[in-house]
Length: 536
Image (cartoon, rainbow, N blue to C red; front, top):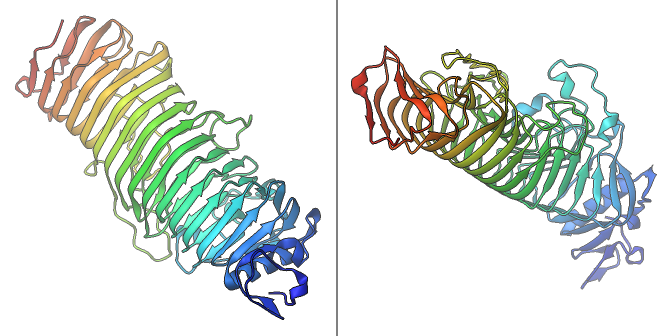
Protein backbone atom coordinates (compact mmCIF):
# COMPACT_ATOMS: atom_id res chain seq x y z
CA UNK A 1 0.00 0.00 0.00
CA UNK A 2 1.25 3.46 -0.82
CA UNK A 3 1.89 5.74 2.15
CA UNK A 4 1.14 9.31 3.12
CA UNK A 5 -2.20 10.85 3.89
CA UNK A 6 -1.66 13.59 1.32
CA UNK A 7 -1.92 11.04 -1.52
CA UNK A 8 -5.65 10.57 -1.03
CA UNK A 9 -5.41 6.89 -1.79
CA UNK A 10 -8.08 5.73 0.62
CA UNK A 11 -11.36 7.34 -0.42
CA UNK A 12 -14.51 7.16 1.62
CA UNK A 13 -15.05 7.23 5.34
CA UNK A 14 -11.85 6.96 7.38
CA UNK A 15 -12.07 7.19 11.12
CA UNK A 16 -8.44 6.75 12.17
CA UNK A 17 -5.52 7.95 10.04
CA UNK A 18 -1.90 7.37 10.84
CA UNK A 19 0.77 9.41 9.03
CA UNK A 20 1.80 6.51 6.83
CA UNK A 21 -1.29 4.72 5.60
CA UNK A 22 -5.06 4.29 5.53
CA UNK A 23 -6.10 1.52 7.87
CA UNK A 24 -9.88 1.31 7.46
CA UNK A 25 -11.73 -0.16 4.49
CA UNK A 26 -12.72 2.39 1.87
CA UNK A 27 -12.63 3.15 -1.85
CA UNK A 28 -9.37 2.84 -3.76
CA UNK A 29 -9.39 4.72 -7.06
CA UNK A 30 -6.93 3.19 -9.52
CA UNK A 31 -6.04 6.66 -10.81
CA UNK A 32 -4.57 7.49 -7.41
CA UNK A 33 -2.13 4.62 -7.94
CA UNK A 34 -1.06 5.89 -11.36
CA UNK A 35 -3.56 4.30 -13.75
CA UNK A 36 -4.08 6.39 -16.88
CA UNK A 37 -7.04 4.74 -18.61
CA UNK A 38 -6.17 5.86 -22.15
CA UNK A 39 -6.27 2.39 -23.74
CA UNK A 40 -2.57 2.35 -24.65
CA UNK A 41 -0.72 2.81 -21.35
CA UNK A 42 -0.23 -0.43 -19.41
CA UNK A 43 -2.13 0.01 -16.15
CA UNK A 44 -1.47 -3.47 -14.74
CA UNK A 45 0.89 -2.31 -11.99
CA UNK A 46 -1.35 0.53 -10.84
CA UNK A 47 -4.49 -1.59 -10.74
CA UNK A 48 -2.69 -4.37 -8.90
CA UNK A 49 -1.40 -1.91 -6.32
CA UNK A 50 -4.96 -0.71 -5.74
CA UNK A 51 -6.12 -4.32 -5.35
CA UNK A 52 -3.30 -5.06 -2.93
CA UNK A 53 -4.18 -1.98 -0.90
CA UNK A 54 -7.83 -2.96 -0.71
CA UNK A 55 -6.82 -6.47 0.25
CA UNK A 56 -4.88 -5.26 3.27
CA UNK A 57 -7.95 -4.22 5.26
CA UNK A 58 -10.82 -4.66 2.78
CA UNK A 59 -12.44 -2.17 0.48
CA UNK A 60 -13.51 -1.36 -3.07
CA UNK A 61 -11.21 -0.79 -6.01
CA UNK A 62 -12.86 1.84 -8.20
CA UNK A 63 -12.27 1.84 -11.94
CA UNK A 64 -13.70 5.07 -13.36
CA UNK A 65 -14.70 5.71 -16.98
CA UNK A 66 -11.80 5.08 -19.33
CA UNK A 67 -10.00 2.21 -21.06
CA UNK A 68 -7.52 0.43 -18.82
CA UNK A 69 -5.11 -1.87 -20.63
CA UNK A 70 -3.89 -4.66 -18.35
CA UNK A 71 -2.46 -8.11 -18.01
CA UNK A 72 -3.13 -10.58 -15.18
CA UNK A 73 -4.55 -9.24 -11.94
CA UNK A 74 -4.58 -11.23 -8.69
CA UNK A 75 -7.70 -10.63 -6.62
CA UNK A 76 -7.59 -10.46 -2.81
CA UNK A 77 -10.01 -11.40 -0.03
CA UNK A 78 -12.50 -8.91 1.36
CA UNK A 79 -12.53 -6.65 -1.66
CA UNK A 80 -14.75 -5.52 -4.52
CA UNK A 81 -13.59 -4.60 -8.00
CA UNK A 82 -16.11 -2.01 -9.21
CA UNK A 83 -16.25 -0.85 -12.82
CA UNK A 84 -18.12 2.41 -13.17
CA UNK A 85 -20.25 3.22 -16.21
CA UNK A 86 -17.95 3.85 -19.17
CA UNK A 87 -15.07 1.86 -17.68
CA UNK A 88 -13.44 -0.80 -19.84
CA UNK A 89 -10.91 -3.24 -18.41
CA UNK A 90 -9.05 -4.24 -21.56
CA UNK A 91 -7.01 -7.42 -21.61
CA UNK A 92 -3.57 -7.38 -23.16
CA UNK A 93 -3.08 -9.22 -26.45
CA UNK A 94 0.36 -10.47 -25.40
CA UNK A 95 0.36 -13.77 -23.46
CA UNK A 96 3.55 -12.67 -21.72
CA UNK A 97 1.46 -10.18 -19.75
CA UNK A 98 -0.47 -13.04 -18.11
CA UNK A 99 0.88 -15.02 -15.17
CA UNK A 100 0.52 -18.79 -15.06
CA UNK A 101 -1.45 -20.37 -12.21
CA UNK A 102 -1.79 -24.03 -11.38
CA UNK A 103 -4.24 -24.61 -8.53
CA UNK A 104 -3.36 -26.87 -5.66
CA UNK A 105 -6.52 -28.93 -6.28
CA UNK A 106 -5.96 -31.18 -9.32
CA UNK A 107 -8.50 -31.31 -12.13
CA UNK A 108 -8.69 -32.12 -15.82
CA UNK A 109 -8.15 -28.42 -16.52
CA UNK A 110 -4.53 -28.67 -15.33
CA UNK A 111 -3.64 -30.04 -18.76
CA UNK A 112 -4.33 -26.74 -20.46
CA UNK A 113 -5.71 -23.98 -18.24
CA UNK A 114 -2.89 -21.63 -17.30
CA UNK A 115 -3.74 -17.97 -17.75
CA UNK A 116 -6.52 -15.64 -16.59
CA UNK A 117 -7.11 -11.91 -16.62
CA UNK A 118 -8.66 -11.95 -13.11
CA UNK A 119 -7.53 -14.78 -10.85
CA UNK A 120 -8.21 -15.72 -7.25
CA UNK A 121 -7.49 -18.87 -5.23
CA UNK A 122 -8.49 -19.67 -1.64
CA UNK A 123 -10.05 -16.24 -1.18
CA UNK A 124 -13.22 -15.13 0.55
CA UNK A 125 -15.63 -12.24 0.29
CA UNK A 126 -14.78 -11.07 -3.22
CA UNK A 127 -16.95 -9.23 -5.73
CA UNK A 128 -16.84 -7.83 -9.24
CA UNK A 129 -19.58 -5.25 -9.79
CA UNK A 130 -20.63 -2.22 -11.74
CA UNK A 131 -21.89 -1.09 -15.13
CA UNK A 132 -18.57 -1.27 -16.93
CA UNK A 133 -17.11 -3.81 -19.35
CA UNK A 134 -14.32 -6.38 -19.28
CA UNK A 135 -12.97 -7.06 -22.78
CA UNK A 136 -10.40 -9.81 -23.25
CA UNK A 137 -9.52 -9.00 -26.90
CA UNK A 138 -9.53 -12.78 -27.31
CA UNK A 139 -9.51 -12.78 -31.09
CA UNK A 140 -5.84 -11.81 -31.00
CA UNK A 141 -4.84 -15.20 -29.55
CA UNK A 142 -4.45 -17.46 -32.55
CA UNK A 143 -4.71 -21.25 -32.42
CA UNK A 144 -1.89 -22.87 -34.34
CA UNK A 145 -2.78 -26.55 -33.86
CA UNK A 146 -5.78 -28.80 -33.26
CA UNK A 147 -3.67 -31.22 -31.22
CA UNK A 148 -4.86 -31.68 -27.63
CA UNK A 149 -4.05 -30.17 -25.19
CA UNK A 150 -1.90 -27.69 -27.14
CA UNK A 151 -4.89 -26.15 -28.89
CA UNK A 152 -6.25 -24.93 -25.55
CA UNK A 153 -3.04 -23.39 -24.24
CA UNK A 154 -1.89 -19.80 -24.23
CA UNK A 155 -5.43 -18.43 -24.35
CA UNK A 156 -6.36 -16.56 -21.16
CA UNK A 157 -9.74 -16.68 -19.48
CA UNK A 158 -11.38 -13.50 -18.25
CA UNK A 159 -12.27 -14.72 -14.72
CA UNK A 160 -11.07 -17.77 -12.83
CA UNK A 161 -11.78 -18.32 -9.15
CA UNK A 162 -10.58 -21.50 -7.44
CA UNK A 163 -11.49 -22.65 -3.94
CA UNK A 164 -13.06 -19.31 -3.06
CA UNK A 165 -15.98 -18.60 -0.72
CA UNK A 166 -18.63 -15.90 -0.93
CA UNK A 167 -18.27 -14.62 -4.49
CA UNK A 168 -20.49 -11.98 -6.07
CA UNK A 169 -20.39 -10.97 -9.74
CA UNK A 170 -23.06 -8.45 -10.62
CA UNK A 171 -24.08 -6.03 -13.34
CA UNK A 172 -20.98 -6.03 -15.51
CA UNK A 173 -20.64 -6.84 -19.20
CA UNK A 174 -17.99 -9.31 -20.36
CA UNK A 175 -16.91 -9.88 -23.95
CA UNK A 176 -14.24 -11.36 -26.21
CA UNK A 177 -12.48 -13.95 -24.09
CA UNK A 178 -9.77 -16.00 -25.75
CA UNK A 179 -11.20 -19.14 -24.11
CA UNK A 180 -14.02 -19.66 -21.59
CA UNK A 181 -15.33 -16.39 -20.28
CA UNK A 182 -15.49 -17.29 -16.58
CA UNK A 183 -14.63 -20.42 -14.61
CA UNK A 184 -15.66 -21.02 -10.99
CA UNK A 185 -13.89 -24.12 -9.68
CA UNK A 186 -14.37 -25.65 -6.22
CA UNK A 187 -16.05 -22.51 -4.93
CA UNK A 188 -18.88 -22.09 -2.41
CA UNK A 189 -21.59 -19.48 -2.01
CA UNK A 190 -21.46 -17.95 -5.48
CA UNK A 191 -23.96 -15.33 -6.68
CA UNK A 192 -23.94 -14.16 -10.29
CA UNK A 193 -26.63 -11.63 -11.12
CA UNK A 194 -27.54 -9.34 -13.97
CA UNK A 195 -24.43 -9.81 -16.12
CA UNK A 196 -24.21 -9.70 -19.92
CA UNK A 197 -21.81 -11.93 -21.82
CA UNK A 198 -20.97 -11.78 -25.52
CA UNK A 199 -18.31 -14.28 -26.57
CA UNK A 200 -17.78 -14.93 -30.29
CA UNK A 201 -14.11 -14.24 -31.02
CA UNK A 202 -12.36 -17.59 -30.56
CA UNK A 203 -12.81 -21.31 -30.04
CA UNK A 204 -14.16 -22.64 -26.73
CA UNK A 205 -16.04 -19.39 -26.11
CA UNK A 206 -18.29 -20.55 -23.25
CA UNK A 207 -20.41 -18.06 -21.29
CA UNK A 208 -19.91 -19.52 -17.81
CA UNK A 209 -18.47 -22.75 -16.39
CA UNK A 210 -19.48 -23.80 -12.89
CA UNK A 211 -17.21 -26.66 -11.88
CA UNK A 212 -17.31 -28.63 -8.64
CA UNK A 213 -19.01 -25.73 -6.84
CA UNK A 214 -21.75 -25.74 -4.24
CA UNK A 215 -24.40 -23.22 -3.23
CA UNK A 216 -24.59 -21.22 -6.45
CA UNK A 217 -27.28 -18.84 -7.74
CA UNK A 218 -27.20 -17.48 -11.29
CA UNK A 219 -30.04 -15.10 -12.11
CA UNK A 220 -31.22 -12.44 -14.55
CA UNK A 221 -28.32 -12.86 -16.96
CA UNK A 222 -27.94 -12.51 -20.73
CA UNK A 223 -25.50 -14.68 -22.66
CA UNK A 224 -24.68 -15.01 -26.36
CA UNK A 225 -21.76 -17.32 -27.10
CA UNK A 226 -20.19 -19.41 -29.83
CA UNK A 227 -19.58 -22.40 -27.56
CA UNK A 228 -21.75 -23.58 -24.66
CA UNK A 229 -23.66 -20.94 -22.68
CA UNK A 230 -24.64 -22.17 -19.20
CA UNK A 231 -22.20 -25.00 -18.45
CA UNK A 232 -22.08 -27.00 -15.23
CA UNK A 233 -19.04 -29.29 -15.08
CA UNK A 234 -17.21 -31.63 -12.73
CA UNK A 235 -13.56 -31.82 -13.81
CA UNK A 236 -12.35 -33.25 -10.48
CA UNK A 237 -13.76 -35.47 -7.75
CA UNK A 238 -15.88 -32.58 -6.46
CA UNK A 239 -19.63 -32.64 -7.04
CA UNK A 240 -21.38 -29.59 -8.47
CA UNK A 241 -24.39 -29.25 -6.17
CA UNK A 242 -27.06 -26.97 -4.77
CA UNK A 243 -27.23 -24.79 -7.86
CA UNK A 244 -30.09 -22.53 -8.97
CA UNK A 245 -30.24 -20.88 -12.39
CA UNK A 246 -33.25 -18.70 -13.21
CA UNK A 247 -34.56 -15.82 -15.32
CA UNK A 248 -31.91 -15.84 -18.04
CA UNK A 249 -31.85 -15.34 -21.83
CA UNK A 250 -29.30 -17.59 -23.55
CA UNK A 251 -28.01 -18.00 -27.09
CA UNK A 252 -25.34 -20.45 -28.21
CA UNK A 253 -24.05 -21.94 -31.41
CA UNK A 254 -23.53 -25.12 -29.38
CA UNK A 255 -25.45 -26.07 -26.21
CA UNK A 256 -27.50 -23.47 -24.38
CA UNK A 257 -27.92 -25.44 -21.13
CA UNK A 258 -25.31 -28.13 -20.52
CA UNK A 259 -24.70 -30.29 -17.48
CA UNK A 260 -21.79 -32.61 -17.98
CA UNK A 261 -19.24 -33.59 -20.56
CA UNK A 262 -16.73 -33.74 -17.71
CA UNK A 263 -18.55 -35.55 -14.89
CA UNK A 264 -15.92 -37.07 -12.60
CA UNK A 265 -17.55 -36.09 -9.30
CA UNK A 266 -20.98 -35.45 -10.71
CA UNK A 267 -24.04 -33.29 -10.14
CA UNK A 268 -26.64 -33.11 -7.41
CA UNK A 269 -29.56 -30.85 -6.56
CA UNK A 270 -29.70 -28.50 -9.53
CA UNK A 271 -32.71 -26.37 -10.42
CA UNK A 272 -32.89 -24.50 -13.75
CA UNK A 273 -36.02 -22.49 -14.57
CA UNK A 274 -37.50 -19.59 -16.50
CA UNK A 275 -35.02 -19.57 -19.37
CA UNK A 276 -35.45 -18.29 -22.92
CA UNK A 277 -33.15 -19.94 -25.46
CA UNK A 278 -33.01 -18.13 -28.78
CA UNK A 279 -30.75 -17.99 -31.84
CA UNK A 280 -27.54 -15.98 -31.56
CA UNK A 281 -27.32 -12.54 -33.09
CA UNK A 282 -23.80 -13.41 -34.27
CA UNK A 283 -24.07 -14.35 -37.95
CA UNK A 284 -21.25 -16.90 -38.19
CA UNK A 285 -20.20 -19.84 -36.03
CA UNK A 286 -16.84 -21.38 -35.15
CA UNK A 287 -18.33 -24.48 -33.55
CA UNK A 288 -21.85 -25.87 -33.81
CA UNK A 289 -24.57 -24.36 -35.94
CA UNK A 290 -25.99 -20.84 -36.32
CA UNK A 291 -29.10 -21.62 -34.23
CA UNK A 292 -27.35 -24.04 -31.86
CA UNK A 293 -26.84 -27.78 -31.34
CA UNK A 294 -29.02 -28.45 -28.28
CA UNK A 295 -31.30 -26.61 -25.93
CA UNK A 296 -30.82 -28.91 -22.92
CA UNK A 297 -27.97 -31.44 -22.65
CA UNK A 298 -27.31 -33.69 -19.66
CA UNK A 299 -24.23 -35.80 -20.38
CA UNK A 300 -22.51 -38.23 -17.98
CA UNK A 301 -19.56 -40.04 -19.53
CA UNK A 302 -16.64 -39.91 -17.04
CA UNK A 303 -18.11 -41.71 -14.04
CA UNK A 304 -19.65 -39.70 -11.24
CA UNK A 305 -23.28 -39.30 -10.26
CA UNK A 306 -26.14 -37.24 -11.60
CA UNK A 307 -29.02 -37.08 -9.11
CA UNK A 308 -31.75 -34.53 -8.59
CA UNK A 309 -31.98 -32.25 -11.64
CA UNK A 310 -35.11 -30.13 -12.18
CA UNK A 311 -35.55 -28.07 -15.34
CA UNK A 312 -38.77 -26.14 -15.97
CA UNK A 313 -40.37 -23.27 -17.86
CA UNK A 314 -37.99 -23.22 -20.82
CA UNK A 315 -38.71 -21.63 -24.19
CA UNK A 316 -36.40 -23.12 -26.81
CA UNK A 317 -36.20 -21.66 -30.31
CA UNK A 318 -33.57 -22.76 -32.78
CA UNK A 319 -31.26 -25.53 -31.51
CA UNK A 320 -31.34 -28.71 -33.56
CA UNK A 321 -32.06 -30.99 -30.60
CA UNK A 322 -34.21 -29.55 -27.81
CA UNK A 323 -33.58 -32.32 -25.21
CA UNK A 324 -30.68 -34.77 -24.95
CA UNK A 325 -29.74 -37.02 -22.03
CA UNK A 326 -26.85 -39.46 -22.13
CA UNK A 327 -25.13 -41.91 -19.79
CA UNK A 328 -21.96 -43.05 -21.55
CA UNK A 329 -18.58 -44.56 -20.76
CA UNK A 330 -15.77 -42.40 -22.09
CA UNK A 331 -13.97 -42.95 -18.79
CA UNK A 332 -11.50 -40.11 -19.08
CA UNK A 333 -9.23 -39.55 -16.06
CA UNK A 334 -8.36 -36.09 -14.76
CA UNK A 335 -4.94 -36.95 -13.34
CA UNK A 336 -2.17 -39.12 -14.75
CA UNK A 337 -2.01 -42.55 -13.12
CA UNK A 338 -5.61 -42.58 -11.92
CA UNK A 339 -7.68 -45.73 -12.46
CA UNK A 340 -10.28 -45.48 -15.20
CA UNK A 341 -13.64 -44.50 -13.67
CA UNK A 342 -16.57 -46.90 -13.72
CA UNK A 343 -19.77 -46.06 -15.54
CA UNK A 344 -21.56 -43.37 -13.56
CA UNK A 345 -25.17 -43.15 -12.42
CA UNK A 346 -27.89 -41.02 -13.95
CA UNK A 347 -31.15 -40.69 -12.04
CA UNK A 348 -33.95 -38.46 -10.76
CA UNK A 349 -34.41 -35.88 -13.50
CA UNK A 350 -37.60 -33.85 -13.97
CA UNK A 351 -38.07 -31.71 -17.08
CA UNK A 352 -41.37 -29.86 -17.44
CA UNK A 353 -43.13 -27.03 -19.22
CA UNK A 354 -41.02 -26.87 -22.35
CA UNK A 355 -42.05 -25.15 -25.58
CA UNK A 356 -39.60 -25.77 -28.41
CA UNK A 357 -39.53 -24.74 -32.06
CA UNK A 358 -36.87 -24.76 -34.75
CA UNK A 359 -35.65 -28.31 -34.11
CA UNK A 360 -34.25 -30.19 -37.11
CA UNK A 361 -34.63 -33.82 -38.21
CA UNK A 362 -32.26 -35.40 -35.63
CA UNK A 363 -34.74 -36.11 -32.81
CA UNK A 364 -34.40 -36.05 -29.02
CA UNK A 365 -32.76 -38.96 -27.21
CA UNK A 366 -32.56 -40.30 -23.66
CA UNK A 367 -30.11 -43.19 -23.51
CA UNK A 368 -28.10 -45.29 -21.10
CA UNK A 369 -25.95 -48.34 -21.82
CA UNK A 370 -26.71 -52.07 -21.64
CA UNK A 371 -26.72 -52.90 -17.93
CA UNK A 372 -26.45 -49.21 -16.98
CA UNK A 373 -29.85 -47.57 -17.42
CA UNK A 374 -30.77 -43.97 -16.88
CA UNK A 375 -33.33 -44.00 -14.08
CA UNK A 376 -36.37 -42.09 -12.85
CA UNK A 377 -36.76 -39.58 -15.65
CA UNK A 378 -39.96 -37.52 -15.85
CA UNK A 379 -40.95 -35.40 -18.83
CA UNK A 380 -44.21 -33.46 -18.65
CA UNK A 381 -46.04 -30.61 -20.35
CA UNK A 382 -43.78 -30.50 -23.38
CA UNK A 383 -44.57 -29.34 -26.91
CA UNK A 384 -41.93 -29.59 -29.65
CA UNK A 385 -42.15 -28.63 -33.31
CA UNK A 386 -39.57 -30.40 -35.48
CA UNK A 387 -38.52 -29.54 -39.00
CA UNK A 388 -39.55 -32.97 -40.26
CA UNK A 389 -38.70 -34.33 -43.68
CA UNK A 390 -36.50 -37.07 -42.24
CA UNK A 391 -35.59 -40.31 -44.01
CA UNK A 392 -37.90 -43.30 -43.90
CA UNK A 393 -35.95 -45.19 -41.24
CA UNK A 394 -37.74 -48.29 -39.93
CA UNK A 395 -38.34 -48.63 -36.20
CA UNK A 396 -35.92 -51.57 -36.10
CA UNK A 397 -33.08 -49.37 -37.34
CA UNK A 398 -30.07 -50.03 -35.09
CA UNK A 399 -28.82 -46.88 -33.43
CA UNK A 400 -25.14 -47.39 -32.49
CA UNK A 401 -24.33 -47.53 -28.79
CA UNK A 402 -21.19 -45.32 -29.02
CA UNK A 403 -20.32 -45.74 -25.31
CA UNK A 404 -17.01 -43.87 -25.50
CA UNK A 405 -18.06 -40.94 -27.64
CA UNK A 406 -18.20 -37.30 -26.65
CA UNK A 407 -21.77 -36.69 -25.43
CA UNK A 408 -23.17 -34.51 -28.20
CA UNK A 409 -26.83 -34.69 -29.19
CA UNK A 410 -26.03 -35.15 -32.88
CA UNK A 411 -23.52 -38.01 -32.43
CA UNK A 412 -26.08 -40.75 -33.14
CA UNK A 413 -26.98 -39.14 -36.44
CA UNK A 414 -30.59 -39.10 -37.64
CA UNK A 415 -32.64 -41.21 -35.23
CA UNK A 416 -35.41 -43.64 -36.33
CA UNK A 417 -37.93 -41.53 -34.39
CA UNK A 418 -38.40 -37.87 -35.16
CA UNK A 419 -39.63 -37.07 -31.63
CA UNK A 420 -38.04 -39.12 -28.83
CA UNK A 421 -35.74 -42.14 -28.81
CA UNK A 422 -35.41 -43.75 -25.35
CA UNK A 423 -33.14 -46.74 -24.73
CA UNK A 424 -31.67 -48.56 -21.72
CA UNK A 425 -33.82 -46.84 -19.14
CA UNK A 426 -35.80 -47.57 -15.99
CA UNK A 427 -38.61 -45.56 -14.44
CA UNK A 428 -39.58 -43.29 -17.34
CA UNK A 429 -42.68 -41.11 -17.15
CA UNK A 430 -43.95 -39.17 -20.19
CA UNK A 431 -46.98 -37.01 -19.50
CA UNK A 432 -48.81 -34.51 -21.72
CA UNK A 433 -46.27 -34.44 -24.52
CA UNK A 434 -47.00 -33.28 -28.04
CA UNK A 435 -44.65 -33.53 -31.03
CA UNK A 436 -45.30 -32.07 -34.47
CA UNK A 437 -43.41 -31.50 -37.69
CA UNK A 438 -43.40 -28.82 -40.39
CA UNK A 439 -42.62 -31.16 -43.30
CA UNK A 440 -44.26 -34.62 -43.17
CA UNK A 441 -41.93 -37.19 -41.61
CA UNK A 442 -42.51 -40.95 -42.05
CA UNK A 443 -40.55 -41.96 -38.94
CA UNK A 444 -42.08 -43.02 -35.65
CA UNK A 445 -42.76 -40.24 -33.17
CA UNK A 446 -41.59 -42.25 -30.15
CA UNK A 447 -39.42 -45.34 -29.79
CA UNK A 448 -38.75 -46.93 -26.39
CA UNK A 449 -36.25 -49.82 -26.41
CA UNK A 450 -35.14 -51.87 -23.39
CA UNK A 451 -37.14 -49.74 -20.97
CA UNK A 452 -38.56 -50.94 -17.64
CA UNK A 453 -41.31 -49.23 -15.63
CA UNK A 454 -42.50 -47.00 -18.44
CA UNK A 455 -45.56 -44.76 -18.18
CA UNK A 456 -46.87 -42.83 -21.19
CA UNK A 457 -49.91 -40.64 -20.64
CA UNK A 458 -51.45 -38.19 -23.11
CA UNK A 459 -48.78 -38.51 -25.77
CA UNK A 460 -49.89 -36.83 -28.99
CA UNK A 461 -48.05 -36.87 -32.29
CA UNK A 462 -48.36 -35.84 -35.88
CA UNK A 463 -47.76 -38.71 -38.23
CA UNK A 464 -47.82 -39.81 -41.85
CA UNK A 465 -50.73 -42.11 -42.69
CA UNK A 466 -48.58 -44.56 -44.68
CA UNK A 467 -45.48 -44.17 -42.50
CA UNK A 468 -44.08 -46.16 -39.60
CA UNK A 469 -46.05 -46.84 -36.41
CA UNK A 470 -46.51 -43.68 -34.36
CA UNK A 471 -45.15 -45.38 -31.22
CA UNK A 472 -42.83 -48.38 -31.09
CA UNK A 473 -42.28 -50.29 -27.83
CA UNK A 474 -39.38 -52.72 -28.11
CA UNK A 475 -38.37 -55.07 -25.30
CA UNK A 476 -40.26 -53.07 -22.67
CA UNK A 477 -41.39 -54.28 -19.25
CA UNK A 478 -44.08 -53.02 -16.88
CA UNK A 479 -45.43 -50.43 -19.28
CA UNK A 480 -48.62 -48.37 -19.27
CA UNK A 481 -49.85 -46.42 -22.30
CA UNK A 482 -52.95 -44.33 -21.62
CA UNK A 483 -54.86 -41.37 -23.05
CA UNK A 484 -52.69 -41.09 -26.15
CA UNK A 485 -53.51 -40.50 -29.81
CA UNK A 486 -52.25 -39.45 -33.23
CA UNK A 487 -53.04 -35.89 -34.25
CA UNK A 488 -53.99 -36.90 -37.78
CA UNK A 489 -55.01 -40.14 -39.53
CA UNK A 490 -52.42 -42.90 -39.25
CA UNK A 491 -51.96 -46.54 -40.08
CA UNK A 492 -50.55 -48.40 -37.07
CA UNK A 493 -50.60 -46.37 -33.87
CA UNK A 494 -48.65 -48.71 -31.57
CA UNK A 495 -46.11 -51.38 -32.45
CA UNK A 496 -44.92 -53.88 -29.79
CA UNK A 497 -41.78 -55.93 -30.45
CA UNK A 498 -39.52 -58.28 -28.49
CA UNK A 499 -39.63 -61.64 -26.77
CA UNK A 500 -38.65 -59.99 -23.47
CA UNK A 501 -41.70 -57.75 -23.51
CA UNK A 502 -43.60 -58.16 -20.22
CA UNK A 503 -46.68 -56.62 -18.57
CA UNK A 504 -47.78 -54.06 -21.13
CA UNK A 505 -51.12 -52.33 -20.52
CA UNK A 506 -52.83 -50.35 -23.30
CA UNK A 507 -55.85 -48.47 -21.95
CA UNK A 508 -58.05 -45.46 -22.70
CA UNK A 509 -56.27 -44.49 -25.90
CA UNK A 510 -58.03 -43.04 -28.94
CA UNK A 511 -58.31 -45.20 -32.05
CA UNK A 512 -60.73 -43.17 -34.20
CA UNK A 513 -57.94 -41.91 -36.49
CA UNK A 514 -55.98 -45.16 -36.85
CA UNK A 515 -56.26 -48.16 -39.12
CA UNK A 516 -54.80 -50.44 -36.45
CA UNK A 517 -54.44 -49.51 -32.79
CA UNK A 518 -51.93 -52.20 -31.79
CA UNK A 519 -49.68 -54.40 -33.92
CA UNK A 520 -47.67 -57.11 -32.14
CA UNK A 521 -44.64 -58.82 -33.62
CA UNK A 522 -44.59 -62.61 -33.70
CA UNK A 523 -41.93 -62.76 -30.98
CA UNK A 524 -44.25 -61.09 -28.43
CA UNK A 525 -46.20 -63.30 -26.05
CA UNK A 526 -49.82 -62.04 -26.43
CA UNK A 527 -50.52 -62.93 -22.80
CA UNK A 528 -48.10 -60.18 -21.74
CA UNK A 529 -50.08 -57.45 -23.54
CA UNK A 530 -53.36 -56.22 -22.06
CA UNK A 531 -55.55 -54.05 -24.29
CA UNK A 532 -58.61 -52.65 -22.50
CA UNK A 533 -61.14 -49.82 -22.72
CA UNK A 534 -59.64 -47.96 -25.63
CA UNK A 535 -61.90 -45.40 -27.29
CA UNK A 536 -63.05 -45.38 -30.88
